[in-house]
Image 1 (tube, rainbow, N blue to C red):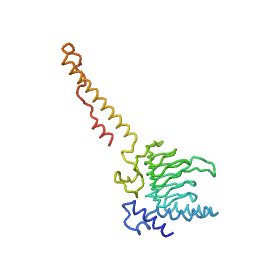
Image 2: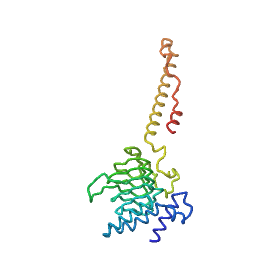
Image 3: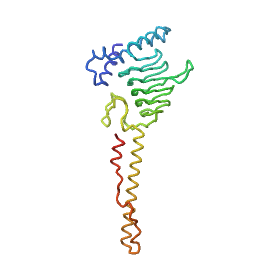
Length: 260
């Protein structure tokens, strides 16, 4: 038991640079208090003391601002960061090492009792502020949910989900959302999402690169025609005056605007 308590504290010290000491974490982190109160509530729920489990859960909600149903399953090293307004439903499952920020809802879309109505988060998942994960599906290990995303379908392991409704960006090999892993290629982003993960920005950059490439090819064609025209006295005037012999497409500036 004490080893698990130490693990709860250490995961916060590892992931939150604002955490200065063990005492500060124990006394000033409501996410930790919510986890510790959930465990007796969960025990009561599964040992026939359902009212007591709900009452402990209700007290934890009042005390921490985090509502976790006593029936929910929470793994080890789970960190509710800030976490005011978080709601975790009855059949939700949160895997080891997950990080959940404020305003997150792990909710259900079904009204049938006894069914799997709430999502299952795999290991090391990051759910960013304001995200809503709704339904009895799985979010794979190492996945990331962007801020304010509304996820209504499964998310593969290592993938990123952003937008309303959420669009899925496939994982990049060797990258994970886990804050405890050593990632020299790409450091952990606190709220899970960076500009590189935005699918609209990626699409715009692809269109810009494609347009720039096409203009380059057209310029090469006109330059070749101009050379052939100069060599052939009878075809001097085959190059129109408005031919785009020089490239004028400012791909760099457009990419900067998309990046902003």
